[in-house]
Length: 148
Image (cartoon, rainbow, N blue to C red):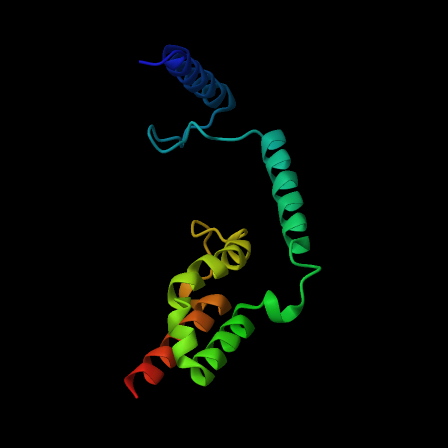
């Protein structure tokens, strides 16, 4: 056991007891044991989280603000690679581009996923996202040109 483990379980037990007492005092009779979370947040914590999230999202919009549109749009980037592959297939193959693309696209995709939450009710499926479709189209074009 590491230090603080006992304190943590004591805190959780006390927190549960306190919440149970609040429910009893407030007459909240529809509570079902095991259906709540130890991670329930106070309104203050929710507001702080929302402010932090908004700040991160605002900062994320600025990440590529000084980058030319051709170099921060996944579809446009992949089109350039597709052109390279079609015009200079030997050079393209020798550069091991298929191994480089995941690292190249990673920051762009991560930025687009920064606000994605699969636990929200109306979340967008990955397959429906523009970057996913662009990669899918690039892969399909790549497979077609390789089968020629």
